Length: 152
Ligand code: ZN
Image (cartoon, rainbow, N blue to C red):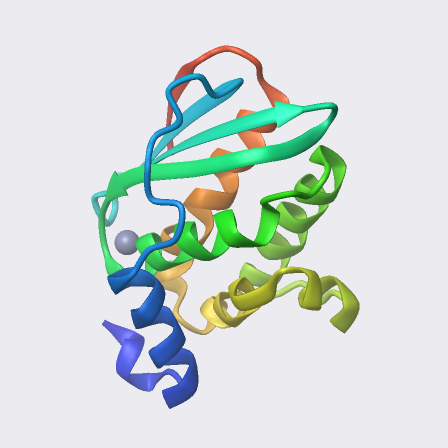
């Protein structure tokens, strides 16, 4: 895979998130859950999000898959925890846009924290889905209230 082509610092941050994931746990009483599969790579991400007063009070994920998908999920949960639903949806949009090569101002990118590293994933087209599925899962979890599974 293309990880070796990534800038060394970026690679280190990605591997650190993949090896020491943040918020990798289920939230049994979460207000919304969403599972997204990426069949082209075999990645599965289950996002549990607990929203209170229109704010993400807690978020966790479980799942399996490649380094990029797991690191991205860890970065995503870190980035959106404590944000309002609207802020989190905007961040998901920024990430998805950047991943397919659309530009956003730097202030949008700064919001993403470590996750902004993976916005350069469009240089590796085969990995775009790996990086974006956790953000899709978040988006769908926030926009829908009941449990549901979706194939990508
Ligand atoms: Zn993958």
